Image (cartoon, rainbow, N blue to C red; front, side, top):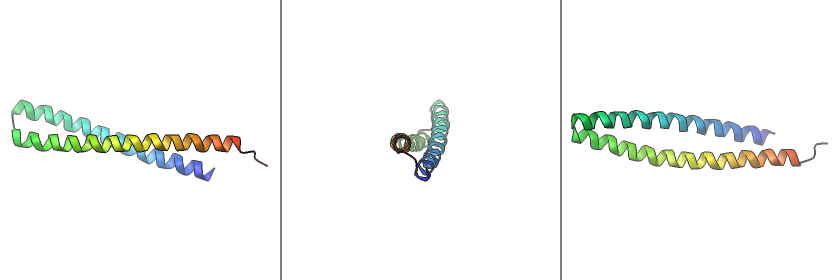
Length: 85
């Protein structure tokens, strides 16, 4: 049970990072649109770089979250298949 709780806790931390990064990505994309409208090429390039980096990090976190989900499911299955005496 402790292992399961730790896995769920780890997954909640990852989900928090995921939600934060998604929010930041949306914020930066909105800034990108505003900068394009204002035609500030230098600032736009910097924001686009940030967006590329955040998309990469987001993909890595999503992959980690998926793996943690699999671990949680497997741990839960093991708990239910292990007879308790």
